[in-house]
Length: 433
Image 1: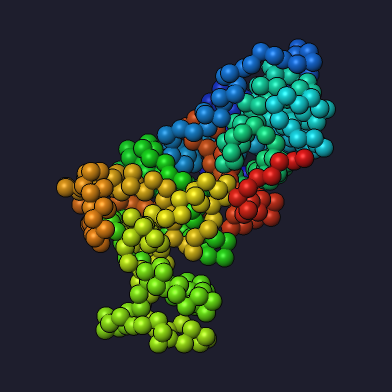
Image 2: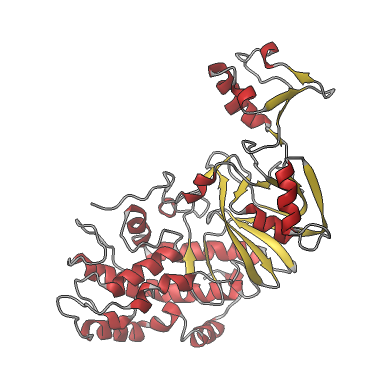
């Protein structure tokens, strides 16, 4: 293990003793206990051809994965170290089996491949040992698959689709390496993050608003494409703009707007985008050579409104990358499985909830006042009474006080193993037929 963890062998044993009731650490504290565990599984009572007792508790185990513990809290580094110890033991005991099947595995299926799936889920702590190793995909397995899916940021539908199978077949030693990589990232964040702060976890495409160490809001996000990545940064939110103007960045003008204008000369007019010169004068689009190699040196500014690229809200923070957080008129994008669609900025689902939280300590800006101002359609910048820290992070593996180890797709391929980037860019998980 890396010296950076600062945990010696004696401390390691202490950690494992303290983790006796948490997840896989309890099951895999050593080779002897691992063998005992597998003996218990093998000797567990079979449930016959089918277990018709629906285990409601098992079916809801995915709910336990979601909590108000932040991705990075006061004890996160220690919890990730604890997870590393547990995964080291899993690896030293042979890891877990691959799951391969010619049939679609879901509730109600009976197939020999379900035995391998049960073993895999037991070893990772998603399925209790008492569930046994039958061929039946019963309610216990259904609940365990849902829990696994929730831990990996996948839709918890209990069906072994394309990305669930890919995630479940990543070897244990690779997950161990991912935990170590992320431990280094988390150690670099050690310190006081602030009484109130916003954390954007790019691989998870989620946002947390944290207050006094607890998540008070969690938002689905849309972050940068692979070729237009959202940056890693630490900054402070200083302003919320209601009914914002949108000024197109030079990269979007060159890569997107110029080609669109060549195909459709009415594009700017239809999208309420005005051309403004250095003196603040409006320039007619008809005077521009849209076939030129370089875009004109003009401001491309979109008026406030429902079709505005930022819709109702823009959240500003200091940074050199010219990125920000904002609303969007394309709300359907939040329903995608994988949400890497922006040019670097971060779109926020239910952004008005976040704005209300950001402005709650700014006098005169209640939720009703925010809504009333948005209805006017008038551009209204609002300075926060106290700036709120914001962190754009890249965390693909973590564990918190609940002891649940979570992983996400390494979409930007920063973790050092190609297999960890599942390439889930289509946003639709296909079932295995």
